[in-house]
Length: 332
View 1 (cartoon, one colour):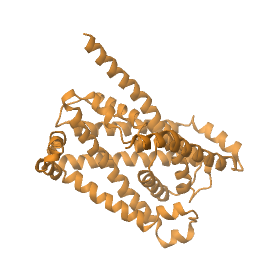
View 2 (cartoon, rainbow, N blue to C red):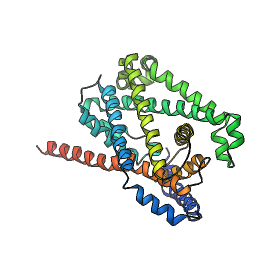
View 3 (cartoon, rainbow, N blue to C red):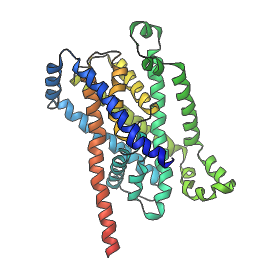
View 4 (tube, rainbow, N blue to C red):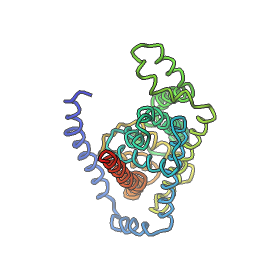
């Protein structure tokens, strides 16, 4: 990206979007007729056992991601589960600073041997693609669920953004992306062969060769781990919605969570603008079934904080530990 464009995005467009979205969320909150009662309810929910289970599910979520990482780096080197867990949390801390959390490889590969770090980037990309594939597949199912004529007539979709997310264009785009992801995941060896034949790509070959070492059995395990992580996300939202009295039937809740994650996958976010974007998107999606704007936004904030902020903080400590160890070794 051009340096001037980076400066424009980071120091002008990003802050401007953050202010605009934050103000929009603020206006929606203060117009809630029962604001004091809702706020009291939110504070009370923090001490409910179900809230603790949401945190436990976060630990399970990152445990599944650690198991994925173990599987992905197995052709390069063997790492224990604890080290894999530290790696994925370190990756989480770096993703908080990158658009759409695309920079997780920067933290993960720090825990690999020096000679395997560049090769580990390809493994990270493959893992991210498997998770995106599940997000797109579930999202399309959620969109189809609400495209039934009974729902289109009975549920108000007033904004152009609500109409867009349930449109044929979004389904077509998602299916096109799914086709590309399936091709890369299960036929990635073709990319390796292509890099070997094209002179300009020869240097790339040694770093992406790991892709062709995965068997279909490994790739199916990868998809399974990603699917289980997705189920954890849905369960977390279901539990926290019940705590905050954001009422909707089970199937509708599952479908709307799928649509919400699809929206977040397709809409670009820039660093610190992710939270207000999430809040606005959540109101647009879950507001179809509930007018509890405060509850919806509090649930979204809670999931974001539990699933990303806490792990990112812990991951930053692990990164600091790796850096200190490296400096100690250099002094020795």
